[in-house]
Length: 366
Image 1 (spheres, rainbow, N blue to C red):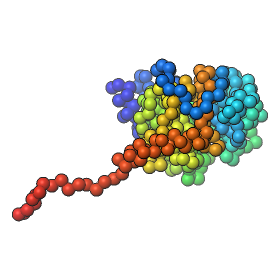
Image 2 (image 1 turned 90 degrees about the vertical axis):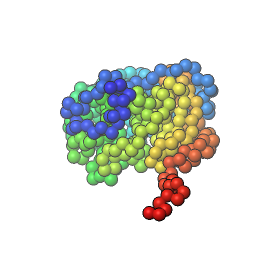
Image 3 (image 1 turned 45 degrees about the vertical axis):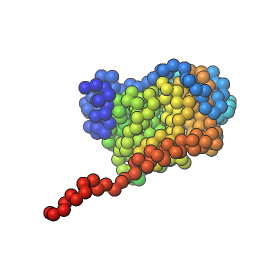
Image 4 (image 1 turned 180 degrees about the vertical axis):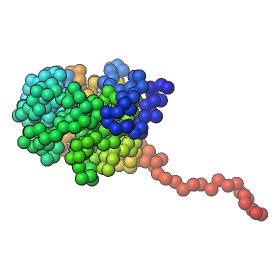
């Protein structure tokens, strides 16, 4: 079976309990997704305004009025038009930035670093333990996946260790997901085994797990609990919810090499960058099926993406090509331009009454 066919079969495949042999059963070539290289120079100039930024940005996170950027051995803090107002040194081996209320967390080989909006460190949680992923909750708790095991550590709002238990074997990204359950719920992305797993935090246990395409990459969560992830190797956008249990709602083909993803909750959209084709595509998910709403050329190697507080977008290059800023008006104009095609696609998705295709006179004399 080819990797692509195996991935299609695996999209909705439930996994056995975390830590079982089934979790690691992946076809050769699946998992461990990384950004795909560009196919060549973009034929179009990037949309919007490009701000000079000679940094290799591999991740971006909005914290209050600032945007924090992960750039090799630095964390930068700035605004859409001034992306490097502050610069802070970090270990290049640290992981990806993640939200934690009005601060950010950064999993590192020496603990979980808590960062203020200017990128400066305010505390190190779990000092002396290496973590590959971390996230903060609205109640002040911080959760981190240990680098050397299948366990997560839970720290209270006071920074003290409160709990630990086994979950997925690899923690690549943790997401705090709004749900209607009694317990706080996290989703964990496991890139080596291309899967997504629930963590039922207040019950100290893992929940359900699903295979996520053939090479899951970054994911983003919206205010309503919509989770968007990219299947880098399969070239798909995957939409999940976890209100009562984690469910894959749909998978949609996207331009080759999807990587950065952001949920635009106010507009009911998901934005995805393609590092191969050099485009940023908006998908309307309001109907339950992801439909293309707009597409714009990006800076080269766009691996960082944020939706600004006022509805703009900023994409960041991982190869020093700068920060691409589209204010809210530019975003709305792009969506207006694609409105006719989007409405046509919606019309095709609407249910229709079956047509009477019986030939004239059929049924007479019976």
